Image 1 (tube, rainbow, N blue to C red):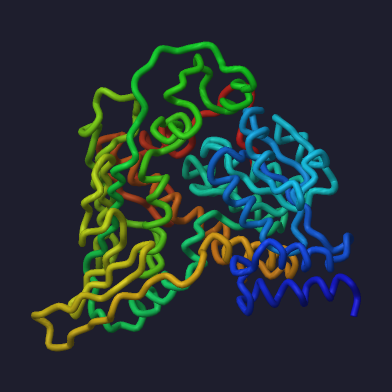
Image 2: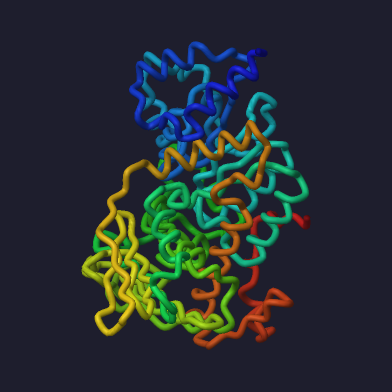
Length: 443
């Protein structure tokens, strides 16, 4: 058996679920890694490593044969911190190449795949450029910061035939899949309403502060990229980018793509017919934010309604959970969240549906990364747990909710044309304007 075939066979024992990588200790990984021929190892580069991007890197490094060979971040302080977190007995950080411009990293021939963990406004450009450079891509959610970005990312994957996994790792967690199997079994009866809620008590915007000088070690111009040029403000930077339209879409696109995703999967739903979003800065009007801290959105589909309900600064959400998806059927209601799932029977129904509480039994992020790496090896794109097509679908639905809120209009979606029936809304919101010499490639 060739060394490459041995690597694929050994990897499949873990990637296939027979032995979860997350269950192995560091010593076991070191032993396994030493048995992988250098020619068969997978080299990754990481672009944006301050938050979730670094969690993705750590998940990737649990897979035998995966090497971190390059990192890119606009904040040298972040790079220094993250590299210091790598165990010195396993990683020689002096060999890891460092960049602040992702385009230089993509020029490295030794990089096979990249992980994109930047703020949302950079996802599309970096993913498309990575595909053009022949790299496979793991891109954090939401995949695009506008509907046209989502469409263009799908087109890029199709044209360049790269493996692109979206960071909606719940798709790889078993209890989410089991819950959806129950929904699809029909035991809940006719499902007329699906409620999705996200109450995040710990999340709140930063205080209003004056603009300031750019801190040492930060390439702020590179951080802005295609976003409008403006003076540096600490309350818009790093984690807080989420609350500003230039860079992201608030809770709707931050948590919404995770939760709305499973609502759409459960109902096998396409795009909605109409959308209306109502909300505002009700909790923290004095803090630094543009996106709503309170938002209720109603999506109309054929045969059912989908309700999105989000609030910052509150933990007491529906069914006593701070987040979740509820499939409300004639025979029972299935409540699903990261902590597990259960079915609450409908007392008025003669055909009652019920199920005890099911706890999670695995690590969704680890399995999601294992799935991505296995597809890099097999080239079977249909095996991806969250393809760019799937990520673009839910990101588009989330964008619809935000656009309705921002316009103050009930919107109608023309699925045949892939746009709203209101052309003024299309002109203003389907694509965010690019600045500073950047443009979205035409694929």
